[in-house]
Length: 201
Image (cartoon, rainbow, N blue to C red):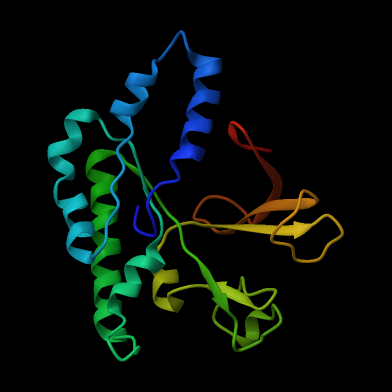
């Protein structure tokens, strides 16, 4: 975790739902032993998570979730509010290469969450007017073109009101998962919902 500490209530809900269907296969103790959370307050703590990964492999780690990469990039905001773009770019390039090496070496799946920012170019979804083909509804992935080139796959999650407009709250919400970038899947989208057990669609 890099954005904020884990929502323990939400994790407990998902754990209870999972145990209700798999109580004969796994215990609550085993779940807690096999899920490792690391809340990192700075780059040094964040780096230690990956430097210690080899030692943790006796736990057979198979999935790493980074939540989220923009919070990591925020460490390069200087005291005057300006972003040190050169240092941030160098870090992201090196970090993404190291993550790919770890994934290959240990057979890991690495999921990296990212935020979106306002599309100040206002290209209205026209890819000929900007470098992000997925720019729509005046938002674009955070960290710019460089980070877009660092990742192998991109899945975009969107939330709308059932009537078609943008919505951030309420029960009348439609959620969509969109394959934006992939080396082996065609661009596609599917509706999904969040429930007590997690994600279904």
